[in-house]
Length: 356
Image 1 (cartoon, rainbow, N blue to C red):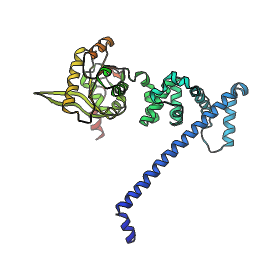
Image 2: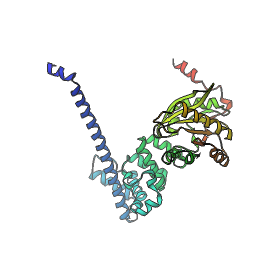
Image 3: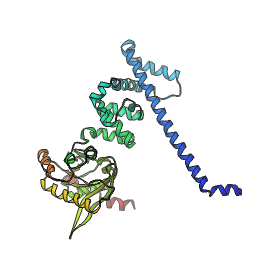
Image 4: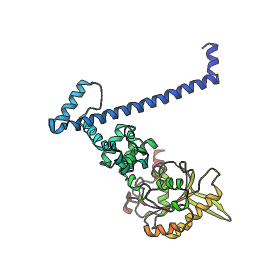
């Protein structure tokens, strides 16, 4: 390496230029990948349209797909995607989304509520789209909900499939809340969208007669999955979060910060049915966080109470009595270990010791 090369290595302007080129290439590479994917899906859509318009199955019989698959592989070699199964999905792709060419239908379906438009269907990978077609069964609002969430959160196929199978569309925004009365309109809409009812805790396994501490321990042991279930933008701050309020110490079950809402979220988990007294405790924690932790750039703190069960009417009346923004949901948990097996399974500590 000569002197000029050595000079370049340590030059800050050269390093900046190199980084700029790298970022530009990566960005264009990503755009190219998205563009290629979009064009491929548009091709699949048009092929599906061709199959429908020619009434191919009734015209050429049950062997049509096998024959077309074979001929396309011969005519366009070294290209994947022309299997019999994939050709049938192309037909399904067109059948599912072709009604969106009628603007009035889009208005009736209220797809715009999830930021949807026709071109969104070409924006996610084909493997994702196949999962959505299988699980949404022609429900366009549901399909666009998952397309939007995939784009928003960069979901892998595994994550998408998980939420398709846990009825996220049906659960999203279903908690009982008083957000409309206690938050500005824009924040209220986002906060309501943030909630789910019930929350799905099937990602944990726990003994049948579990207590509150065991449930919270299990949630913390699976914090990544818990954050995923809570939704977009949640960041974990702490468990049993200590607040000094006057001459007292208060401990919040779980404290989060939501980046999208720009606010703290106080989460209390109860293994019993909802009680109106729970609102008073949660409201106190929310007010305390507003006074002690909330900064100038933060929005108003939100409280979320997740109970084993709730009477919806009682929960609604109780939430309306609070001046703090509070949501009330249930949780669902079915991976319960029978008491008879307790002690037969190794503890986490025993497993760790064995690995050592």
